[in-house]
Image (cartoon, rainbow, N blue to C red):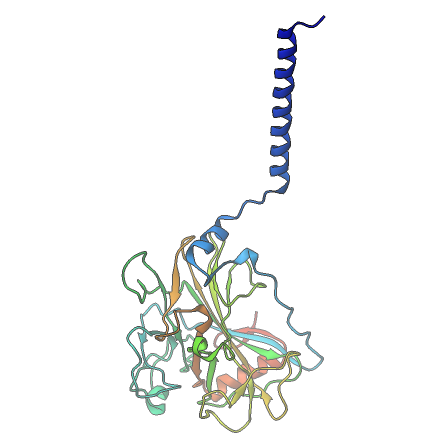
Length: 331
């Protein structure tokens, strides 16, 4: 015969057991279904919609496969990383002779004289930071870290830790020489205002070259932030410039070939690399109204490479070699 006390003890034990089982069940459920956010995802959310955890960006499409007889080589040369501090607000492609706004500064490599007063003659006779004697001018907006409080236009300019210039061929045809004084434009400095139709901003990290984004990437610890400037490379065969500074050069079609009526020239790629501490807020210099958006990243060049140097580049690309610097010797 059970006593009242024994009955109460049984009820208490049953309740304790039920609570324990529920606790185990809840714990198992959380363990099976929970997915903790990565520190970079948390940082991206804190920094705002212009930032992205690069590990969350999907891989991009593969490069088009080359056909027989196409230009498959690469030519790389060294123009430094602007360690000499050549910077100003000029844009000799779009508005020569007109200074730009003080908060839209460009980094330069190559021609050492490029400024608001530059002319064709002054550029052609100037010195260069390029080891192979290339007097071309290459430039893009500076990148700054952003203080938590203070200047709305950003903080210290970040000098790239590496700048790589390379020419690439075309997967469908051989390439022809790029004419002297050809101007090239990549991206759109007013992409926010223009709706993004001409934007070609490309950002990635040193450990994720097959993942590309139009946002500021947050990279894994120890990895570098990369800006990739791929220029158009299908020349109309006539002009070195045009009213909008774009029509003389078109981008290849999705399969890699050039539009009808254009000719493949060496495709310029500039990659700038930065060492930024994890979680750092950073941004490029931009025009008013563009929100310092990464979508507005852009770059320019004016080709002043000598005819002999350009011929070496073309020979290297069309022969399918991997070449570097002054003599284009195979590596």
